[in-house]
Length: 577
View (cartoon, rainbow, N blue to C red):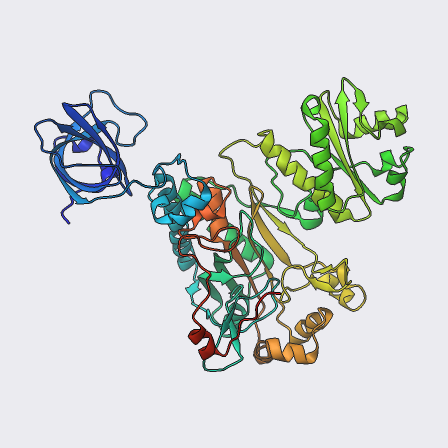
C-alpha cells in the first residue's frame, strides 16, 4: 500500500509537499462545492479538503481510504488538532474498504456503555484516547527494558504451566491430557522461579510477566494481568529500593516527562493505617484520622465507653448538605467494616448536632472541637470498634470517597512513597489461623524473628510497597534464604511436613545448595499505566480485557467445550445443584 506519511506527523514544515495518506474517515462534512474529511490513523487526525473538481466515490464514516494530495497552510487554524495549522488538498481519493454503521461513536467521548465497548473492542481501540493509553503502556515497557538492561539485569522467561502453590488467591488449573487426573497451574506470579534463578546464580533478573489469579474482580483487578517482575541477589533493602526508585523515575521521565524527586519518602505500615486508614494512602490531601478515644470516653454514650478504638475524620464544608439519607448510607458503609459505633456530627457555627451529641456535656463538646479542629459547616465522622483495623480502614475508605467527591486532589499531580514494615502474618477472625500478609517466602525483621516461637503476630516483615496516588503500584520483600527459617514459616502457616514436601519440595531442596541473600519486587504494569494515563479503570489500559464477571463479551469466553475434548482429558462436568 503506497503511503508517504503518517497523518499526525505532518506540520507547517511540510507545506507544499505532495503526500499519499491512508486511514479511517473520522468525520465527513459536505458543503456542496467543498467536502471536508477528517482522516484518522494511529498518529492522529488531519483535515482533507476536497474541491468540486475532484471525483469522489461514496464515502462514509469509518471507511478506509487512500488520499493523494498536497499539504497547504490553513487560513484559520484549528487549535483542537495537533495538525490544525495545515490541511491536505486532495487530488485523488481511493476507497480501500467500506464499513457498516458502527454500534458506537469512534471518538474520545463515545456514547457507548462499557459492555458495548468490550463487545466491539476492535472498534473501541480505534478511539484516539484508547490508542494513547496503549502507547503509554508500551513506553513504560520500553523504559523498563532500557533501565534494567543498563543496570545489569538479565531478562529471563519462567514457565506458564507450573505447579499449584498457595500464594493467596485461587489458581487457574490446566488439566494434563498425558497425565490423567493431574493439573498444571497458571502462575499467580513467578515467585518460586525467580527465587530459584537467584539460587542459580543469575543475581539480577527481570521479566515482563503474565500472571493469573482466579479471584473476584473490581475496577483495578483482572484475572490475567502483567507485572514488571524483578529479583536481585546480595542487595539489602535500602540498595534495592534505591535501584527501583531509579526505575520508576526513569519511567516517569521517559513516558510523561515528569521529574520524580528522589529519594522517595518511607512510611511504616502502622503509621499509614493509623493516619490515613490505608496501607496504600493517597497523601496528596490531608483529612487525617484523629484518635478521639480519650475525649469520648468521658461522654455518657455507653457504646463509646465499651469499645477500645474510637477515631474520626473531619470532612470540610459539607454539614449543610449532609442529609438524613447520606447519614443512613454511611451507616450501611459501617456494616461493611463491622463497626458498632458510626456516627456523624455537624458543626454549625460552633454548635454540634447529631444523634449522640445529647450524651456530650459542654466539656466533651469543647475538647472534641479542640482535638478535631472542626470548623463551621464541617462534619465529624466517628467510628468505633474493638477491632482497630476495622475502624481505620472504614474511615480510610470514606476519606478517599469524600476527597474524590469534593475534588480535594489537585489534577495532574503525583504522589509517590514507600510503605514498609508490614505485619508478617495476619490472624483470621473466624478460625484464629494465621496467614501470610505478603507471601510465605517473606523474610521477617531480623530483630523480631525471636517472636516466631512465642507470638508470631508481633513480627513485622522486611516487605515494602510502592504507592502512587493511592494505588499499590508494586510490592516486594527480602526473601527467606535459610531452609530452617523457611520450614518454620511454613509450619506456622499450618503446613505439615507432607504438605511442604508436596507443594514446595523442589523449592526447599534447592535451599540446601548455597542460597544467596536475595530480594525482589513486582510492579503492576496495568496500574502504572492507569496512573500515567489518567484513568481509574484497569480495563482501559488492556487491549482485550475481561469484564467484572471475568468474561470476554467479544469472544464469549469462557464457554463450554465439546464432550470429546473433556473425554480426552478424563474430565466430567457435574451439574449445578
